[in-house]
Image (tube, rainbow, N blue to C red; front, side, top):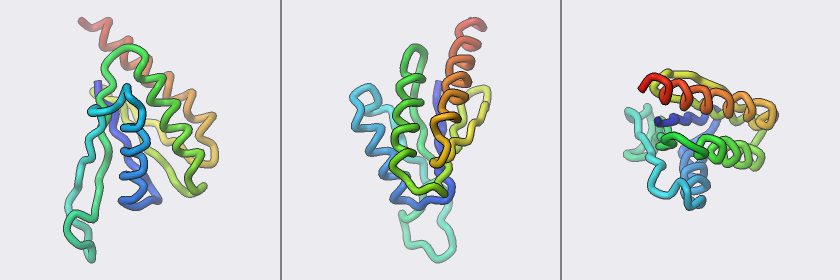
Length: 122
């Protein structure tokens, strides 16, 4: 299972900071991919980012990812929003920097439900 993370209200540096934050945890090294989007008007080559994709799989990595994203948001400005989509069921949760703690529990539920649903379908 993959989790897609989009950062609203931020810039490329925020994606890079989040990718570095996640890669700093040994459980996520090699699991985080930066996905570039089409160039935006006025941007020089390579200066855009569409999302991060994190390979979570099953098990406890969903809990770890929730905690890491929550802690990262606590270090960001109040205007930043991380939109987290759990694939393949496309469940989406928006985590706002100013109230990430409350939203993190919702995200955790989404990730765990998605993992359980995938296991049940096999």
